[in-house]
Length: 269
Image (cartoon, rainbow, N blue to C red; front, side):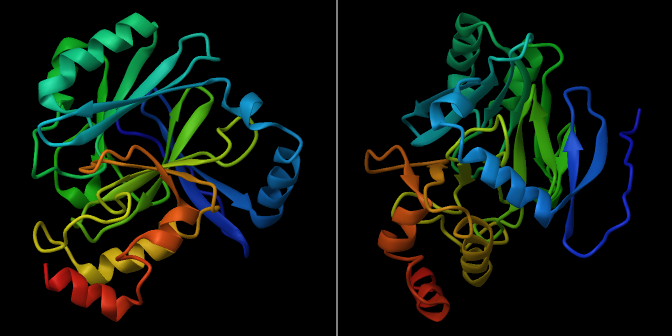
């Protein structure tokens, strides 16, 4: 059955977001700027511990391709629904074993983009866990149960991930950002794929890459997040595990440059 879409008329200050539920339905929601500001005000009275209590989070590593896989689950929900971001074929069994140990229910196996340095574990996971659905961007031209676009929201329990299109490393790259509002993790968390690495970024010379597009994606979609937003990349080659928007805006040796300098750096690699 095709997912349903309900449209709301757009007014000034409203931004539509498509919302996926665990059952595959899709609807369009609109949030006013005023509503967002009220949410931010209310959040100031809630500690990070309280808002993050329902999120179970694990960072996993595959050493051959230096790839990070991320497990997120809403353990405050009766079914403890979970998502797995950027699974690798060689470590799929490890991931599934952990999911079983933690007692969570995997509903989505997601990718930030089509990876050239490893084979995704999505297919293996789907073959071993009935009901798991795959997710990747429509722009990636890959096959999946859900082909997502900029502005979509992927729900797992009462938590959600916002999809931000961040092409440049590849044409289909997206960044998944935890929700903004009550009962969502605070600070927010962004899973940047290869768009932003810790003190670096992904290459732009293949798979439809563009240094100019990557620079604009990062500065418009990632560096506009709050400075304390945690950044978790798809790879690391130097032993780092996490950064923040504020850190990368200060210390990233490539992305702190102006656009033309960044373009020259990337084209000289």
